Length: 343
Image: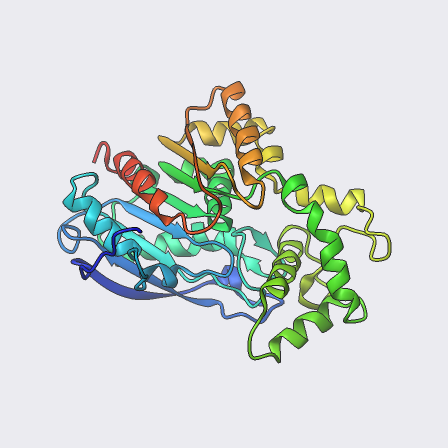
């Protein structure tokens, strides 16, 4: 079994509230003021300026969860401390934004339903961190990383805003939407059929339950994807599925809106390729037994990176999608090297 880390974090953990214009008036009624945990690792508590890493978590997660105790493992602050002791990285400031939503998670894109989360990261979060903490200003001293939906958020930041970051690390990020999502639409319609075909009724009954079952959470996740990739501002919760509710046939126009957000499609744009080329470090990995078939999407994405001549590092490891925080032992030192260079 993995070795448990009994050490207390040696740095300083503090919290920041970010009031975001980008998140106001979202259809979910979620708060526009967001808590951000900020860990100043040993050596970064004074002086500076120091490089910045931003942690984007997976669906059902929050950056605040990465600050907590975990059995036979370690929090991200504990992991950073250990990597510093092992001399694999140096002093750094790490931000853990709470980006959880009432639909169970976040894809970190601008949505009329969930809020303009892409704008939140660039226009609200980064300026607040540079204003309040001893972090080195500017793109060449900051990096973003995440796993699953957080890995998706990180790679999309690179594709759309590679000029705002020095490094991106994507662990098992969402890509290859045809394999990732299409097989779940029949299950979603079957679940909604028990609620008169209404996403609104399904969500409202979940809110009245003492707990959400695993299968229900998966349906909720798909509804959240719909509200992220192709929201309907007139529909309850902004949910609009890209399939016929009776036959489950894809609506080509609606599905095309989803695919606009697929990294496999985005990388076909020369503008996105140019953004990736601005990064100093692009790291991607995925388990070879990922239960969401993300290793196939990752392989296809990396093939397109090679064809486009984009410098990157790809690793495929013998594991699935779950319990893979240990992969940060690879990514965090790489990101630190990228953001600390030329200080």
